[in-house]
Amino acid sequence: MEGEPLRVIATAAALKLIAELRAEHGPVIFFQSGGCCEGSAPMCFPLDELHLSSSDVLLGDIGESPFYISTRYFEYWKHTQMIVDVVPGFGAGFSLEGPEGLTFITRSRVFTDAEIRELRETDRI
Image 1: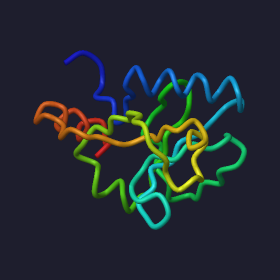
Image 2: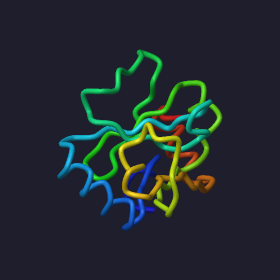
Image 3: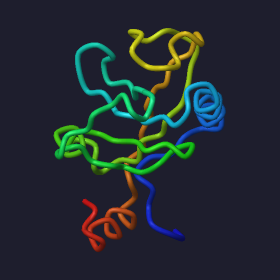
């Protein structure tokens, strides 16, 4: 595999929606929810409306937008690549895509043994 394993990627449909949201709202940020209101959905906010804690982990960028997860959930998901997609439907309403009649979802795949070795060698797991 060329390059380092990406912890988070997005489908073409998700990237298109992110571009539309950025055009309407300016820079956006994602946070992988692991709890109450949105279940375990990736949530999208205007960049200046999400306050991160020192324990949040930056997984990477999708659509020129940072994607974070809490340390607690990172420990659970650290062996997987998160794949952000979009489907018709409505989340609980906190995420920017809700009024569009769409909702971001997270799919995942377990990293290969080679990817795990590379992540360990670079102290990223």
